[in-house]
Length: 251
Image 1: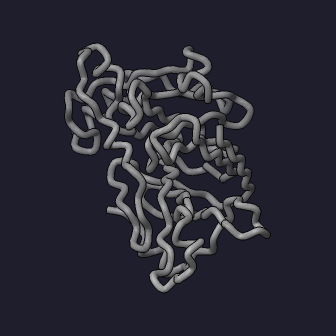
Image 2: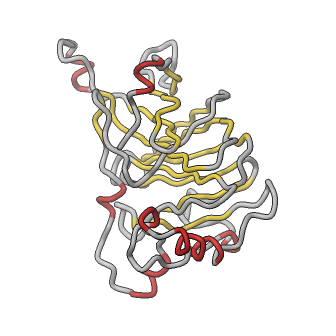
């Protein structure tokens, strides 16, 4: 099994909206989590999937997208999704969101949104975690989950699967100031190389894997895998120009 472990420690807050994420200019998206939708043969299973990330008052949602499959394996010292079974380590943390009858949460009336909120038990303290089934994965028989936690500084570990192969996993970890309620998404994609790169070795190698951290559609941080010897193939955080960052809000 090819496994690579990358650990990053930094401080800036970040987040994202999941359903409206689009590939950024200069970036090549990997298969979207939406390509993982498959025919739902079991109506009961359809009721389990939330289908979208539901914002909850005074809570932070954390999700990942961009590769064939991805999973949050750990938040702080609590195991979330098992790397072996690809299912929640502690089933007691699983929560099914209230049905919106197929209507996007954002288009519900305030009264309807309040009803959805009331049907879900709130987190009791900073150590409480909810795991919510989101959609079917692009990999057969797997499910995409997202997690909900209280808004404080967190250490998050995620497994990304760039290929349709559970044997090839890219491990990524970061510490971030998840202090504002909202939806934080870690999105993986392939960075396009310069067109004038004539190196046969470079052209034969896969384009670098990058991971963006967004909060409610706004790009906050970016990490890209560095192939040079000095970085030893690790993810390195890239500086974001202030003006470019302002223009990176995703519709």
